[in-house]
Image: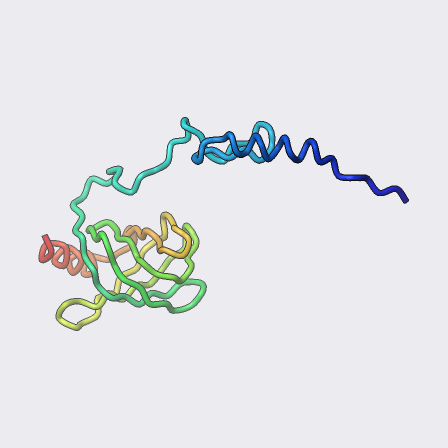
Length: 145
């Protein structure tokens, strides 16, 4: 059985090329770039919603496919919110949410996960609320504006 010797010259050339790359660009193989100047990253401050949002910091308990988890509600609107949590949720998953109001009461809501950020949280759309839940949510948003 033949064993091939490593080609040190090609390895050295590869390492030299990596060192020449700018910090925002890393070429690991020819034609494969992790990031470059033309890559457009989605920024969180890009406005995609038409409804009024309020910055809020309320405790929450939520239940999804992976079980019951704790979290914090941030960036609340009548159509959705961001749940800051370490619990994992999948896009498209229906989640039951309990928001702890400043009055120490719990507001039950349901929503659909529309995007996730691993180990940070997920965005939830309140597209499946009944009229009573919508009124309670609307009142909560208006008290924090």
